[in-house]
Image 1 (cartoon, rainbow, N blue to C red):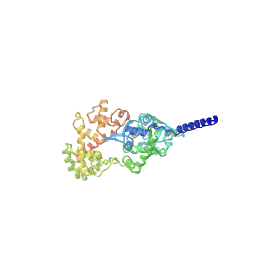
Image 2: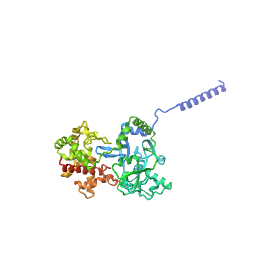
Image 3: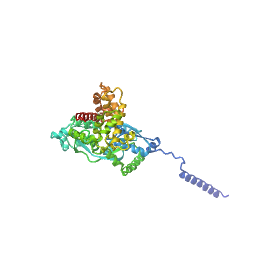
Image 4: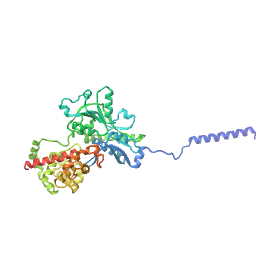
Length: 464
């Protein structure tokens, strides 16, 4: 064979093998590609959604029937959507919530956080779920004294305290930069609710609170009043762990369905209805109802008071405190009937129709008897009933916490007059953060029990 032809053949095959190798290499795809699971995948595989929740009435708290709160309920629904368990870590201030959000094990941080421009540069926010405005809230006493602020200029010289590292502190600093004379103090010691309490007792002149927080608290602190709005509309949103695009997309899809189904409207109505739970009437109105309303239900109060060994007047007075003897009474939290039973409690007690007077009274008497049995044996006499009534109102766990606190304070934890000094402290962070069941409106069961015994006294004097 000619040498030139032979060389051409060798070159041809060399080029062919090279081309085949190159094409094979470029077309090759590994059969076993290693894929890094997303945050959403990890959550579904572990069956746990780790969340941080602010311990406050607008976010998360333990009620008589267990965990409650607008944001808790919302997150609980999302966890059900994912078919995973909700694992809650509680904090007492927004500052703590923000700090904990950097923990890589935390998926969602929920603390009524406004999606401000400054925060959006730092945090990975999920979809917005609530719209609020920041409001200047001041003592009603200032209104009566003629010094109630009407605008930002009127804040000069007033004692104002807001939470540190909150959107409120950002607002104050911005107003100061704009030239307004505002002498405000920032605190990490007190929550927004505690600052509203200080406004109500005239310890400070004003604070700032989101509109939803004010709506929840105005019925508990009647001496606070809205002065004016100090921000544009802001969106509340959850802070998500970084690099969680799939989780964020899934949340947008879920929240859209939640809104369209009407569940969001129901949830907002449940927590933010302006109807008052208790409607306090003057003494003359109570005397009138003793004559007009009580006779309709007296036989049931007497029957079930005897069945469960509870004083008749206690059961009747408790019902008045709950519903003003209105069998169709309904609160914004969904409790109904003469004894204002929640739906879960009614089911547990075997009450099929909470609006039926006899069923409601029987269920309420039985529930109160259960509370009495849970009171420690060391609590004696009429105090056993008062402890039980307080538990009916705020939950057994919080009453137990108040007993622990009373003992630490050198008080007798088994005497009502001492316990009522400890109960209101359950709303203060420096106390409830060390207790098992956390935040509670401890002043409410005190008012509840005292009001019931005031009604008892009136009924005894009226010789019913």
